[in-house]
Image 1 (tube, rainbow, N blue to C red):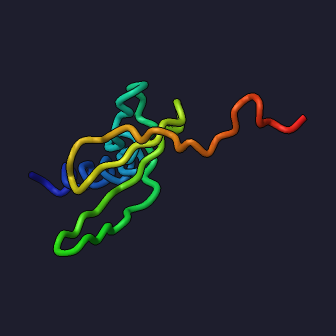
Image 2: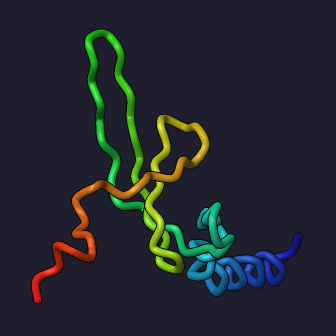
Length: 90
């Protein structure tokens, strides 16, 4: 491998590196778009067991997900805090 081909490889890597996050993002299990955003990682400590829960949100379908340790994405159901049609102020 000559110096010219090595420089071409370096230039190609520099040009393509900004596009890597698009390719490496996880797909949303609901809409299959690459729009998942990592929100935060929470350390859940219970007695002798440590669990790390990572929270995600899809920008396309607005679904929320969680992943316990490195397990599969699980859909998080919305809390019952939302107002029903009767409780909406006029």
